[in-house]
Amino acid sequence: MKNYIIIGGSSGIGKEIVCLLEKQGENVFGTYNKNVIESRGNVQYIHLNVMDDSFEVDQLPDEIHGLAYCPGSINLKPFHRFKEDDFMDDFKLQVLGATKMIKALLPRLKKSEDASILLFSTVAVQSGFSFHSQVAISKGAIEGLTRSLAAELSPTIRVNAIAPSLTDTNLATKLLNTEEKISYHSEKNPLKKIGDPKNIAEAAIFLLTQKSSWITGQIIHVDGGFSKIKQ
Image (tube, rainbow, N blue to C red; front, side, top):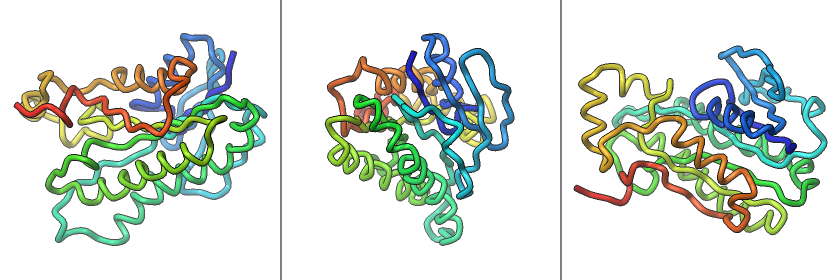
């Protein structure tokens, strides 16, 4: 049984990752902020606001084999409405939050001598979309962090990121809250459907575990072909 920490493990993709690791019999620690969820079996939930500096790691295992940082936001707006405060909130959540958690847990990840860190980007970083400047800046930083840490922490810790396209989670509610919107976005995808959190979680499990023991520094697109295929 190995120890995995899933930051943001109470909803969306993070929750699916927790469930899949639980089914594999792993020891899982998930964090929640607003979505309160009870611990069960080999899954323990801990309250954590990644914007707060008071997080204590003493309640976590001394040796950690995998860390996934899942918190994110989808704030779409025209560039002329771009506000520094809004951007900084996103950057603190998605980038500084990730670096804070990695720094706090790095000594415990190093103890396993074969650990994995998983971050999340978006197809909007490498495929330009209108109204995505705020999202793309933060997630672009995540992609840079992924490659830099992969170089610095190898060979004992692998670091990768997943870049999904539109996925049916709470973050995407405004984009998928009508049948018309669902149909519109589905038709734009080469596979003619919206991503399901489990689609992303399955890839996450692969990257977190030893199944991907020769993969590091990669941005894996799990997007129904959206970033590569034009129809």
